[in-house]
Image 1 (cartoon, helix red, strand yellow):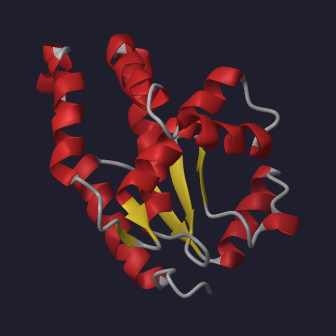
Image 2 (cartoon, rainbow, N blue to C red):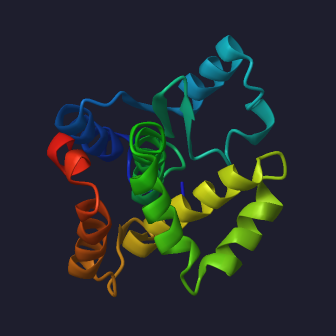
Length: 171
C-alpha cells in the first residue's frame, strides 16, 4: 500500500460520512471484493486491479480501499455532482467547465487525460480534466494542499452558482 493511502477502515469512515450527508451510495471494496465485482459485471479488471483506484458503476461510486486516497473519493463525487448539473442545470455545468477550461493548467492536464483515456469522447475528456483539476486543487498525497485557497474556491464556486438561484435553493 502506498505510504499516503489511508487504511480501508479510515476510507470507509469517510465514505460513511458522505453517504449519510449527501444520500450517496459509495462503496469501499477490498482487492478481493473488487475482483468479485469485476467478475460479476464483466469489467475485466483482473489484470489492472492494482492500478484501479475508483470509478462509477451504475451510479454507485466504487472505491478501491487498497489503492485509493482521499482525492479519489472527491474526484468520483465530483463526477456525480457535475453529471447532475449537466442534466438538470446545463448553464451551471457549462460555467464550472469553462472556469477550469480557461485556467492556466488546463492544457497540461487535458494532454494527460487525452493520452490516458483514448476511448472517451472529447467532451468526456474535458470533464475528466476538470474533475482531476478540482481534486488536485484540493488534495495532494491524501491531505489538503497547503496552498489550497479554500475560501477562494468557495467564493468562485458561489459566484458560478450565484448565477443560478434555483440551483442554490435545491443544493
